[in-house]
Each structure stands twice: as C-alpha cells, then as structure tokens.
Image 1: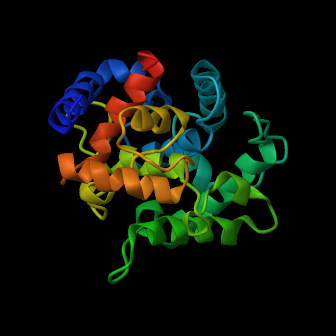
Image 2: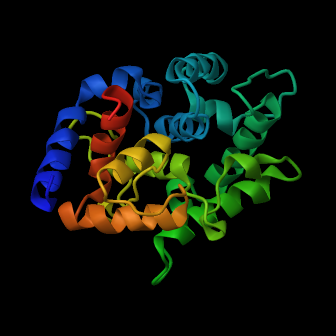
Length: 249
C-alpha cells in the first residue's frame, strides 16, 4: 500500500471496530456496567491495570472484582478500611495490590478526585500527567509495591494500560465504546495504548520503525496518528488493535 491507501485503510478499520460490539470481549465491558462517573473511574482504572493476558481471564477477574466492590464501587472505596480478608488475584496483581489501590484511591478522592490527578499544569507535557498520577498513587500506598503495576513514562515505559484508561475516560461516548467523562484532557493529546498487537501491526504497515514497545515508540506512533486524525489520534487504536487481535494481521 502507498501512504494514501494505508491512511484510508486505517481510518476504515478504525470505523469498523469502534462500535458497541467491540465492548463484548474487551475489559471496558466491566466499567460499562455503571453509570456514576466515580464508579466508572474506579472500575475502569483497576480493569485497565489488570488488562494483560487472556481476555476471557481478564473478564473473569473483572467479575470477581465486582463481587468485591458491589453495586457502588465509589461508596466501597470511600468506606474502605484496609480489609485483610479481601481476596483477589489476577496474574501478578494480588490481594495486597488491590488493597493498596483502593486505599490510595480513597485518599485521592478525599483530596481532589481522580480526574484532577491528571490535570495539566502550565505547559506540562502529556507524560507528566501520568507521572504525577503515579506519584499520587504511590504516595498513599505506603510501602506496598504497587509501582510494578503503574508504569512510568519517565523511565521510557510505554504505559499501555494507563494510556488505555485515559482513552476510556477522555474520548467521546458517541460511538458507544469510550466514556467521554473527562474534559480536562484533550483527545488530541491521547497516545495509542501500545502493546504487542498494536506494535506488530504498526511495524507491519511501516508506520512504526522502533523495535521496542516503549514510550519513545509510543511517541513515534502518536506523531504518525495525529497526521491522520489530528484532533483524535488514539482513534486509530481501534484499527491497530482490531487488526492484530481479530484479523491476525
């Protein structure tokens, strides 16, 4: 494909996959059970955090998470007392990790709310939004090792899961997939959640040259995507992910 054909192909695939049927087998299906902003934020953050491995396994873990948090995750968090009887495991994400997440989220909501953790300061780069949120979570988690589940763009991590969470929160809900809950971040800032699927497809199409899936690659992919959709570059996540997962491109 030449450049024009490649662009048209990606835009077509993005339109094809961004629709409510995408939700059925995706981790975003779990926060879609809720209507209140804070409930969606809390469940969305935890689901994005555990979104690695087999997708059916992720959804099973999501059901387990909801059995703990109940019908009002926000109320559960605000009344959380560091319950040591809580049991939850998804791969390397343990009960201790979940307790630390809930405890940190309680402190964040008491102080400013989750969206405000990502607010832009002056001319701050997008990566610093993630960095400051990560620091807030670690500050309140104390000695618990949740840093391994919260990637840091300052050390060149691709931050796939946090970029996915931000896509969920920021992009419009007009297509019925993302939530469009946050206005403090512009869609034009959002990066593609770079993982093995999106990375491999991007390299196959010749739009990503770097071999590693890291922050530098994420920025390289962002630079390309914003040439096609300047106001909403992460829209192409649907194309790259769909081609990789559903079409073995």
